[in-house]
Amino acid sequence: MYEDALSRVDLFSELSKKELQALAKSCQERSYKAGSTIIAQGDSGVGLYIITAGNVHVTRQTAGHEEEDLGTLGAGNVLGEMALLDDLPRSATVSAVDDVTALLLPVWEFRSFLRDHTDVALKLLVVLSRRLRKAESQHAE
Image (cartoon, rainbow, N blue to C red; front, side, top):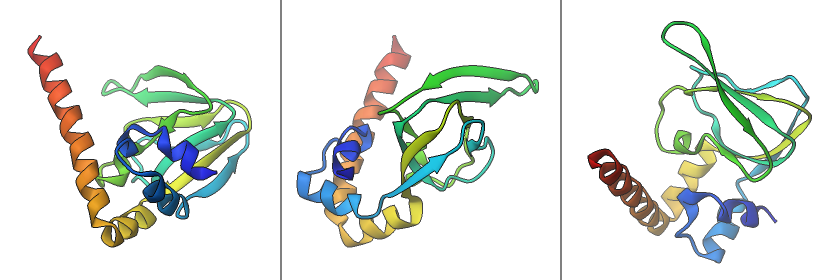
């Protein structure tokens, strides 16, 4: 069940069905009430979230202390993907617009999974390399 949601995460696009099934065992389903904060800008990343039901609103505090509206996301959208790979603070705040259900892949579970499945780490490097090349080519234009 959770492997279907994980298969839609770009970072995991190179993983086999068997690898996705193994990774899915580390996922937890979480529920959030309307109005609650799921992710707070500046906090450390707990993990990756995949929204399975409901909508969230994303905002970011600018350097001038103004709130920038980054939009609304719903079922199927992914939040905090990069938190699995780095320990940088969250770059935005995500709040539940209505009651939200999400899958959480905690960073500590993900890193433990990588230690046990080193071949998956190589597949993630392929995806990240593609992203970097794409970003560089867009920047050059």
